[in-house]
Image 1 (cartoon, one colour):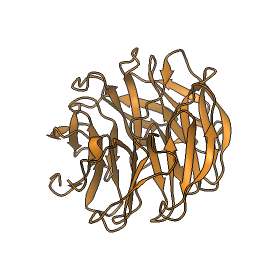
Image 2 (tube, rainbow, N blue to C red):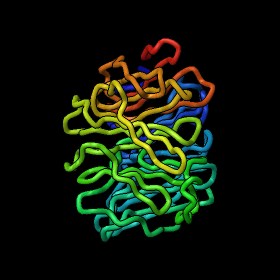
Image 3 (spheres, rainbow, N blue to C red):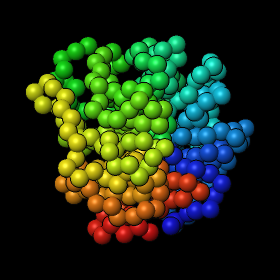
Image 4 (tube, rainbow, N blue to C red):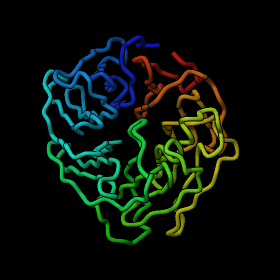
Length: 325
């Protein structure tokens, strides 16, 4: 274990490259390494000591954005390695709860639980310096998003073109919901997910896209019953303008809050049920550790996967042998 024993639960992780990694969590805590984990700088953001930073998106060793979920919902940005932070988004409306943000280049999207029945969405085109609130899709009562790992929104690179529809949000952004109903949103279209839902703790937690941009996995389950394997994962792909869902032949060992693709075939998944590994594109899974983590990250070309979770834990797992360090 590289780090542990801190009074924070980490759910935000952003791996810039093999050396630069940022993490964020509860009690206003942010961590940064720029030497591959040999040393970590820990920051408790002044004025936000009681806030829960559920997601972080980093651009380099000096520049990062952190998201505090509620009361009020805020997004902060630093350009000097965390020495100072600028408030770039604030929403004080009752019921505001931010769940995740994702970037593709300088374009980004943040998603939050419904306000007046519609999902909260805001976009940026200048790397988070400013944000524009959008009108999100209508949700049913009890349908929302999970702020479990900052992964229920992502950018589809090529698949969305097959829908040949107007792009309401200017990107090929895909979002998954959970709770009383679980859906997959892309452009102005939604698809009901064949996952067990109907509880505030059940449904899709996130989406991970494979390197082809047209297939991936949707993951989740029931975080109140983390050992239940049923409905913890779906495979999806875009084929001939259709979105196809299939369950894996062998499901991972329970609830999963994050998945990363190392390549088209190798995947890691983590959650409170532990860590699982797939070597066949997510079709079959093997449980390799009971150690709980909330979030993972991976830099292309690197030989290790980063994990973070409760108690300020930060670890790496080596892709060549699956050994947790």
